[in-house]
Length: 413
Image (cartoon, rainbow, N blue to C red; front, side, top):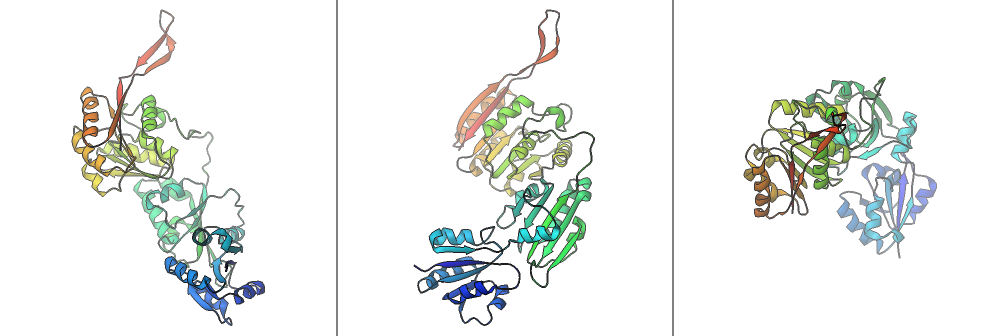
């Protein structure tokens, strides 16, 4: 049985041993930039893209001999190796790795990378890119033709400007390593704004770093779940209380990936907790009031939760332009519960959940009926919370604060 020889290339030259392996193959798969390395070799060449066409030609060539595949760096690291092993089986693929682009870039930047987060933009949902990138103090980014460093910098800059996050803009620094290992190799460094004005070579690695903020005491809670009401910006006490928020998030059963709609976001407390729990979840919080929008933006900036997108307007109208949801929470409906639930249930993904919190008895009675009539399996639970205070009454018993009962209705599709 003939094999695929997957050969990693570092820079602009082939080692003698690599040329010898290729020479004994019946065909070679190579990108255009690697063709110059094959000069002097009389061998059938297969273009590496488009991938599906390459796979077909490679399979045909494998019937009559071994096939070499040239790939940059380590093919097992965000490379073509995964596709080839899945299609042809591990037993038919031999891998000869070279230094990866990450290793070379970090060597040039003199940057230890054992704890460095790595993000590939290829095939990544654009809704969560900013959240993943800006959540890290530093991150190495594999760019692609759709997300060049200058374009990515422009997108990030526009997002931060829209939220008024000038402090984070000032702290961000960009470094780009271009054409690593080739004669045209170049290193560039500058601010986010400067990166938007620069043209970079297609072959590059982008490092984004946020300068640390010097603080006498940490301002952000050291937790991923369980923010207190005073840690989330809100107005006039209008916020989903801690205990209720915990139950709502439990009933939502949030997935690690996907789309979540938070309708009638208010302060955005549900979205804030969801974003901290699930950084790769694309969250759309819908709020019509300017006061609420201001608070949501402030919470996004404070916690760096840029996987949250604020949608200014009212449901159900604004929902039409959003991607189909896997989870939905309705915290406010303005008396339009029927008009909101029907399209939500229709667009909800199979296996998805729709959760409604009801303070009013009318909503608690109406929501299950509406969910059921739209094909959802319903469940309702009423929560009563009493908070014991530190102060004690004349009878020696702790005083308590009783919160209004809340009914949480869940619809499962």
